[in-house]
Image 1 (tube, rainbow, N blue to C red):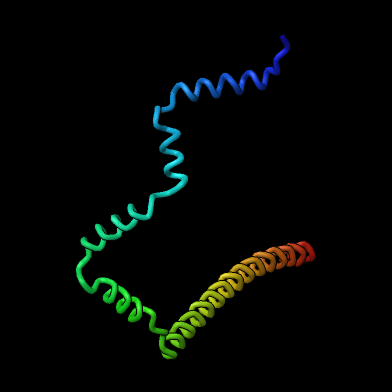
Image 2 (tube, rainbow, N blue to C red):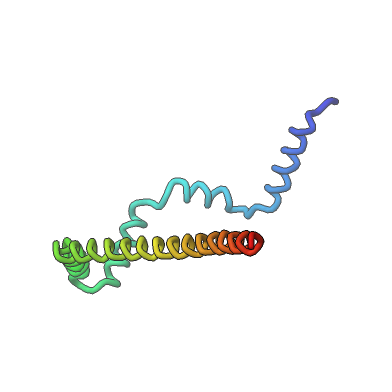
Length: 125
């Protein structure tokens, strides 16, 4: 008898997994796939409603409406000005750093040129 080794391996794996499953596994999977019956949802909603104080929904909606206020133009202008100032400060600091590095590089090169010129002057005398 010639059997497909891959098919045989899948069959053994399926049998091995089935041995380890709980007896009610299939029933629980089907129940969760179909969802709870409507009466269970009604019971859950009623139980949750009993835990909330009266007026809870109104308080939540009022708090949400109070939080949704638009920022004032003054606060938007202040934030824009602070952002512009921070960007300008960053540009100035970067420019200062680059300028100092360029000055140091140029001074080092000029020092070499001056030393070479002094050597030439001393040799010519």
